[in-house]
Length: 322
Image (cartoon, rainbow, N blue to C red):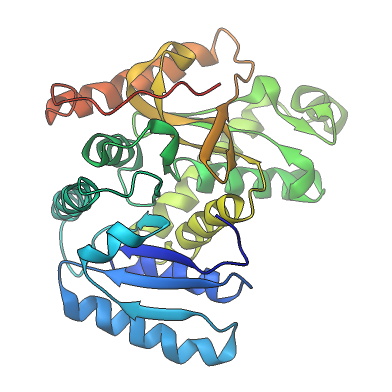
């Protein structure tokens, strides 16, 4: 993919997250066609019309409602998920699973070079399901995972230490089955987080409190339906790294095949994202306290995918990611 050429992006699910993603792209200079697809066609039309009106105040893009047939011609598929509209969490998850199956049926006719970005929750389970139903190599299916938690924790740490959050580097790994802040490799301007705490006189309990606050902020945003801006921005950031081949490093939900000792599961690990999706999975140093928590998270997601029968199905090709 090349940003000069028009890129077709199919947004599956015309709810809050899909609209947030498209709005973030409206503020960019990408040459894209955004196609909203939803099991309720009127919802896709309404969202597209709303964004068409907003486009006059931003960069020009092509935005329209479409059908699942458009997936066969897309360069990028964004699984934004079903809209809540008063539905229970279980109902939304079931509808999103049905959307993934619809996508898989369309992809069975071709378009093996497409990439899938999953922004819906529960993200690890749906990322794994997207891989299974699509039949694509695992490097072409990426979930937003713990991007929000990692970004929020960096913001809170920056505020606490009175530094630019972009100078704070820390990963929140794991995901649906449990999130783990990797303090052992966290740094502030190259200084370990442990040394930074010593120089600022803050005990380790402060770090854990900041992590819990980060989780609470993300959870509250999702529960009150106002987390679509951050969720949409995370998807747009991933899309940017793909479209511009930027090779950014993100902690995102990835289908694992022996990495971090886990198979038949997906959870957030640091990866390099470029034009072909996941270029490589990075092995960050994890200490003896963090590794058991990380594995426990993976096993819980593994159990979830087995519970709904995804492991027993015909497995999609397992590509080797360096």
